[in-house]
Length: 461
Image 1 (cartoon, one colour):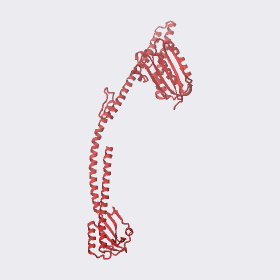
Image 2 (cartoon, one colour):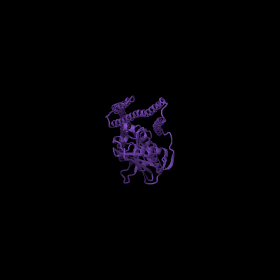
Image 3 (tube, helix red, strand yellow):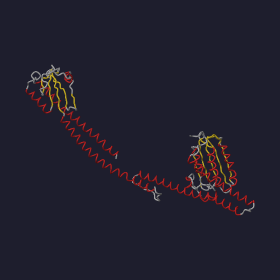
Image 4 (cartoon, helix red, strand yellow):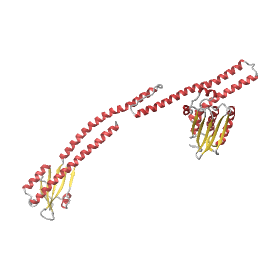
């Protein structure tokens, strides 16, 4: 409505003002030309009839009076002695006129002045002796012409323009109100549809294809809604999985403890075996809780990065030494390719956690026999790069974009057999993001997976 008002009313105001001013300027110009022509004729007659020496000429006086009546003005005839020899108002007859306009006219400069405030045109016309070659100026006509009629016509134009403008404003406001309702209605539909979702997710997508803009908005909202539903579903599934993961060690420990209590005379070997099983279940429970706490710390930024300059080569070697027993048990070979010495400013704990999660996953999801994991380290002047490639089972193409999401498990049943909580890669991505780094994945089902990590050498605040 505001745009319509500005585009409709402002040009109308400008046009009205231009038209009125243009009419006034043109009318004054035409009146000035007409009076000037009449005065030139009158000046010639004054010379021919010798009026400057005989101001009692009735013909000239009658013509002056007639022009005065026609143009509702006043005519003064001034001789070379600057004395007024004719005044149609008989007010300044016989007086001396020394106005600047008269002086300029005797010097050969005729003047014309429009006074819009007092509504008159004043001009001077030189009376020249046409009988002499020098055409000397022997007198001056000082004429004042009323412009009341022009101003009355201008006021009529302004009144009609204002009336027309008022009607236009009303019509534009009505049209603007109608158009605004029509234009806003699709957005009101979107608002109503979104409000309907606040009490719960709708199974159907919202659709308002009235405009390209509304269609783009609804498409974006539907994608967001699908994403939220997916996250909500995976969260519910995560709660179920974690509940199961947390209950399973507790149930096992409960069974083992009850067995020992019910058989106080159990052999020492059986007692030690049960206690070892209980210890393993406690470690498993502790791992689940540790992963959850790590993810929470990443999300809430509970701890600032403890930045220190470390050797990435040595760090990778230490990680591989810790994971070597797991790899040997899974019959997986570990290889480290360091193309150059790399020193970087990082949080050693968080970086170690991130790299360990990826490498441990590469070991767990590898081939049953003869698998391998190859870790490569390289750097340029700005970043260092860690590539972790394996010969494992790979990741389905549809799941590649989701593996870094929290609570996401590619193969739920297989993952539960292997172990873990589905939080490792989410923790890894958060840790790398805190270092202003990036992680990418390239995988082919049945052939293996490659994770590519890039982290700045210098810590970026």
